Length: 428
Image (cartoon, rainbow, N blue to C red; front, side, top):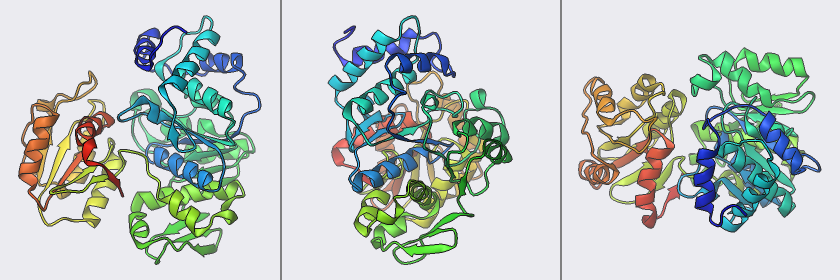
């Protein structure tokens, strides 16, 4: 084995390939075949989308586990520990397991150089095969067509939503981005579209491949306004009888994601086996960093919203769940994001903005972020030196009845969450 610790493996992977992101399937497919990871593959659900893909993947995996199946779940990125990316039966795999999987991929790769993400993808599927899972749920990292997870053919493909993000790699409009995500579709195999208004490019590609589509808003719905929630498919409906707290939480985008996950179970011919207890467990599952609440005075809310669509969803949640006191936002963003629409969507819900520096070469400088936020009508902006100082300032300005919102990137949430972790986190 080349290295003995997980951190050594990860540090090496970050320097091995000349590009951090190098979209393409040839390298990872060659190594997957050398490892025989594309023979006798478990039932595979591949989830792509601009927003919601991590949530849908998590809910699908939770529903399948609650039905008694062995399930492997692969998501990215992680927040606190790399192990979060790979879980089997709801538990993150160990450092030792990841080291063994990395060693297997390293031994099999021959002349092929692999990216950090490609190593992780191969390690996840290697561990799923070793564990004999019944299902593997794979979240696409970027796009779909050329993403490493796309070397496995999905039994059900999912596209949760399509919006502007990662334009440097995927294109500058929804049609091009949609076409990239439609690359996970396979001829004749079913797919779920969780976007109520999918780009024409996705629909055209589905027609070309003869893909049976299930579309949110057309073939299936979730209605959180009905007590206990209502799930509808092709004109027939079912009362889910969820508890009031979960029903209330399944509004907006989260309800749409829940409906999308249920559509996957329907296409797997498992929806009829979903008891009330299974639904409560499965639909209550959320990945870290998505509307995570830390109760207290003030309350903390952490969300990885980092593009216009996810910012609008966060703003909607804040509007539906007001607090008596001020709302303070700790924010840091990557320089390549569509910031204007993000900030415009959230500005009505934020009383004080606290831009903060984060350790990333891609991040927008905090003073430039402060300048942009200061241009919002009537905004109050206070520049913080570092995350710990931002937290202290946020508590002071929010007061005991207010709320601190942390958003803008995974790194932003990570910087705050690792400091809040001892307090525990509640997901909503």
